[in-house]
Length: 325
Ligand code: KDG
Image 1 (cartoon, rainbow, N blue to C red):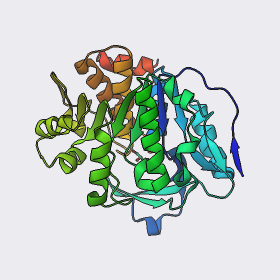
Image 2 (image 1 turned 180 degrees about the horizontal axis):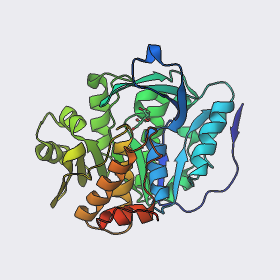
Image 3 (image 1 turned 60 degrees about the vertical axis):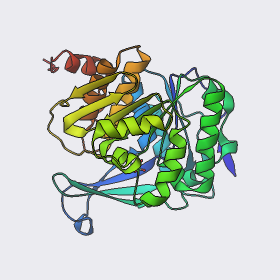
Image 4 (image 1 turned 30 degrees about the vertical axis):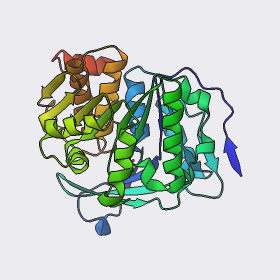
């Protein structure tokens, strides 16, 4: 039996769609086989971005499926607690919420281990999407993780894009290639065909190279631009980010922070960049906000705990590191 929340959704700046999971992080670095104590978080690329947007003062909604048990309740409560609309989440009594572990062998070497095959979110399908929910948003934000989960997820992503385009909703897309979910040769054609349908691509430099076959980030962005989007942003970690459209904008050198854990930085960057665009900022300023959000996300062991509020982001943009006295 499927249970859908009947609460009516508000007008949203950004609607996202994808899987979020229980994330278990060992309390100490080392091999996972030796880890005995874990801290529990909630994570998922799309909900991470939605939470980042909510922290920055935007209205975001997240569409998904979760199990009907305790973990599903925990994921939903956590995302709702961050101010993201979860009215479209379906609880599936026949499937489980995905779980994944981070393994921090040493500083800078984090591995992930998924327990998500046949999860509730893998059952997401086109019929789950309420057209009016997607069509009232300014942006629909998707990632390449969802089409990797199952054929029905792939169809749901295509349906979401079609609904958005029909209503003039801008589509942003992060390829987020997860090689543990599908090999690059399977991912590449699917992701390239999706790029033809989206407005904005937010990609990591390695993924841009994989998709475009160009190692230089600007050359890769230009090649991806030919696939259809009007704007391609390449995230380059500590080197900052680059945006290519008719104009080229570059924000070199991201904010320098003490990195606790890098996973989730890309999702945070996406939130910052989208927030800049929603505020009508130019490319340079949007990249800067993306870099600030991306850097601050890495200051905590979970994906979202370090995401900045608007006041914090603004202070960092002004170069004034906030200190509470
Ligand atoms: O970007 C961080 C996320 O990718 C991670 O927390 C979990 O969504 C996730 C995934 O599918 O890898």
